[in-house]
Amino acid sequence: MATGGYYSDRSIERVRSSTDIVSVIGRYVSLKRAGRSIKGLCPFHREKTPSFFVSPERQMYHCFGCGAGGDVFSFLMNYLNFSFSEAVEELAAEAAVTLEKTGGDSTRTDIFREILAESQSFYRSRLRGREGESARRYLLSRSLSEETVDLLGIGWAPEGGVLSAHLRGRGYSESQLVEAGVALVSTRGSGTYDRFRGRVLFPISDRRGRVISFGGRLLDGAGSNAPKYLNGPDSPIYRKGDYLYGYREAAAAARDLDMIILVEGYFDHARLVAKGFACTVATCGTALTPAQARQIGGLASSVFICYDGDGAGKRASVKAAEVLLQQGYLPRIMAVPDQLDPDDFLRDRPDEAVLELAGAARDPIRFALGLLDGWSMVKGTQKKVKVVQRLAGIASCATEPIIRETLLKIISEETGYSIETLELELREKEKETGRQPESPGDASGLGRWDTSLLAGVLLSPEGLSDPLIEFLESGDLRSGRASEILSEIKRQAESGLSEFQLSRLNEPERTICAMILSVHPERTAPEDHLRLRNAVEKSRLQRERKRLREIQRSGGAEAADDLRRRISEIEDKIKNM
Image 1 (spheres, one colour):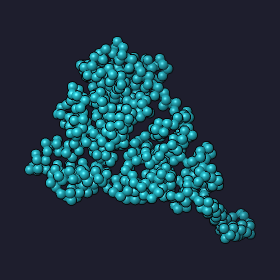
Image 2: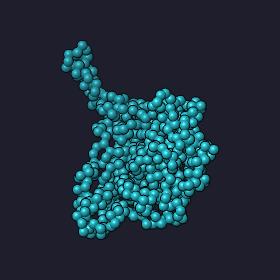
Image 3: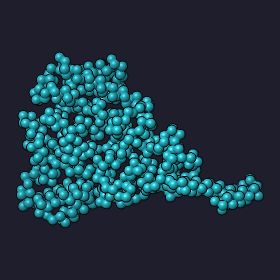
Image 4: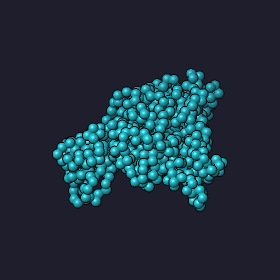
């Protein structure tokens, strides 16, 4: 029922109380005040009318359309694919809260982080040493200065199994090295060997700057049949689709410049950083994922895509733009000249060349048309209908109404088709893909009785010290799910917490509680408290009366007169309540 703890409850509560949920969600969702709550278009499903509400008083969010809901931790978990620990760490860093660990699974993940940190130190020292001479020459041939190499923490993985031997000498087991992603199990016998060999290595860090994986590149002319680039595998501390290379440094720079640049390659990233644009991130060997797109969009209002200038790179640029549109952002695409990648193009040009690329960047519609050399090249051909349909497909990815309308106007201006015709095409597209706005529904599945009792406890001004929590029993609730929620409330009260923590619940219980807190705007008043207690006592009497009547009808062993007396006493109590 409850999620396992990596940090102490006291630490988590300090982080939660130091964080404003409206400020956090407002980085990713356009919010407007609506009475005591704040509303916006739900980031978890497509909708035209806002049904996503954030309560500053409750520090909760809930969508009446799709049922998504929770606290600030669950928002980061659901929206950015953070683990619970990552969400706590991210917000703790912002609030300058020191986290206390509880042990348990933290020991295992800490070992993996230690292995990656030691590996990074090892690779860096090998680049500086005699065996790294060929790697240093290679980096110099790529026009990367020693300053940039040091800034990015670039290292060198020599041939052989030197890293594995080094780490085993530090007391780590072979199975730990394999699970951490730095070694592979030998297929020719027993033992392990280094995953990265003869490669320049780029360390991939988490959002706190801790190394969690590597990306490696073979030296030119290495004469190997191995792939040019090799990325680390997913591990207990790394999921490549959830992380962006260079995110931590880019987050700070993006706030200053109000722009973020997305590239595909490690050397493209290094080139832009060397040109003074630390506001650059790269995917880690995968196509852009929704989780990565949401992280990018939350960093700055201006999002740029800067992929390779060949056909594959241009098509990938449009695909990445579609992912960003789906997450509510309107990117612009930098047009790198044909057959060049950003690193090649910018290497011998002045720093201002980056700003020139940004200034000439196009929206996804005009960029896509540019791949065909403009509308004039197709308007007189049979391809024009398919081209407009493809452009409409790009616009249909936009979940923000204003962005969608902007893209439709661009299509209309470029092609001459009316907005009405294009909107009709969009509706057809949505029917084909099934991306229809979702209709509101009941996210809880609880009856009014259970909802009222849980609301009375969750909204108590006394928090988890409310005597009603101890008074209630699981049998007082009418659904198993509500009973599970009550059990978790009791567990948290017994652990000494003062306020209920939604983040310790699993789904769907977390969503149910978020909905209850969103629907009930007021704290439980003393008269409501008394009313709920009387209602529970009455319900208990009614259940007991029902049980006795069933015994009476079945001709049970209990004396008939005694049963009638007890039933009569219960009925008198009920009448007097």
